[in-house]
Image (cartoon, rainbow, N blue to C red; front, side):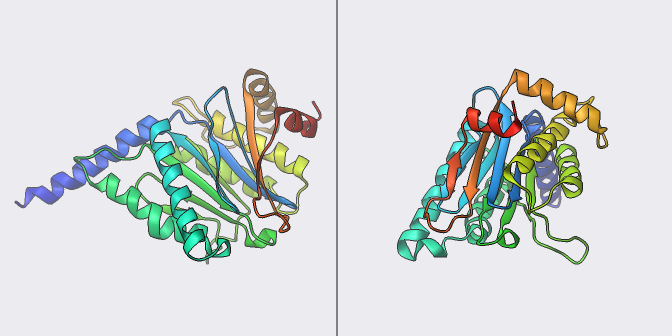
Length: 259
């Protein structure tokens, strides 16, 4: 009997290692606030990774497509139920994550005889002003990280996820140095693409361990843009429309980049 708790702890550790291995190749996703809204973007060839959840909430995800879809549908249903029983204004990303999605992920992760969710999620909720924007990262074990200020860290106007913690950390380091919440859309797009590039360069056993020099980031970004398409969407700050989410076309993206 004494050994049982230790076996559970060992099983949880092995489970975490397995999930990290499955997520390791996931293409990074960056979400950056700018003057008129929030921009989500990633690069890829086919599978959709960015989704609308509710009027002011969007989600990006990496992991197994089936698990992402289950979590996406759960988030939509929970937000819709909240909006119907109360009002659309009462639908809150914090409530959605803390009281609904996080417990579901935590339970699935800790039930060692069942299948965990192979997914890492990034949410954003648009505010009336840039300082009210919320970025929230939700891990496969239910852990939550937000852009809120702490005693040791000032508030961040961006969010990022990638296949590995190291890649995510480098993206955040880059965005802290380069991003400004008052940026134009064009500037936010370029900074977001560069953040994606930093995250991509950090993936794999041979990935970079520190921020690459500017020339390397630019060269890699241009190479990747030739090889893959950009998936991007915005949450617009315009409070005259109920639905703020809008997917961007390839033509819009290329035009903003000056291509």
